[in-house]
Image 1 (tube, rainbow, N blue to C red):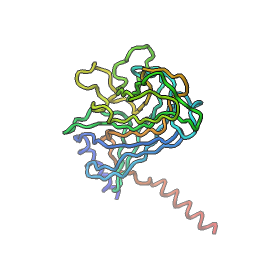
Image 2: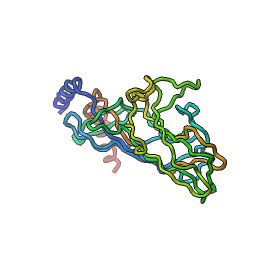
Image 3: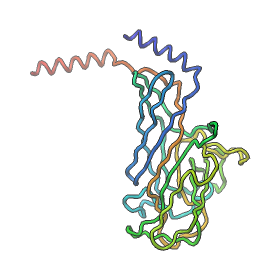
Image 4: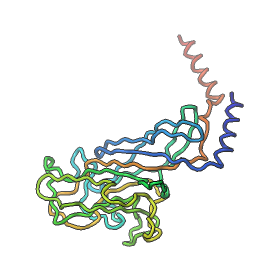
Length: 277
């Protein structure tokens, strides 16, 4: 059995070195500050069928003290062009997850933004849907002087120098159709509001160098600018995102067999239990 597995590993290694990384799709929803779930969809790579892989995220909330139960986060200040002040509500993913196939193989998937993928016709590499507003029932009645400009940031510029640092983020700005007024207000920020294709790489003609490709997967929603709060805060109700990741084809491997030492230990434990009976 061990010889067969070794041969499989060598065959896989030879093929994997010439294969391109496989794109996979993920989706994730955060329903409040403590509750969220997601997964990487099933996929096939090098002839192996990988099952759905659970995905988790950490919430960044700039104002936990003003976030009612049931909401993801609260916004009360500008995020600016690149979220340098870290005033946006964010979903942060980091590190690597490992997918498992139904025939006993593993492969790692780094949680990082991919470079732009061009389809025919072209479509979004990343999507989002974020209901936001206020909550009068929770005592948060948000009023603003003018229409706020809300934005999605793929990663953020974490160099605090009031300059857009190259290769740290990508931004998509969306204008609300009306300002917050007295009483209950509810809006949804989605990837269908504007016509630009949403990916992590600068579009043609944009200033070079400001993009998120290769950065850790972190998606922020914030108040870029425009308007002013006269009461309340902007509450994020739910936070749903999805998009593309790349498998690391070099990590394709067989699930390791138990070592002889582990098998011997297991046998000793079973034998000891029998003797005690």
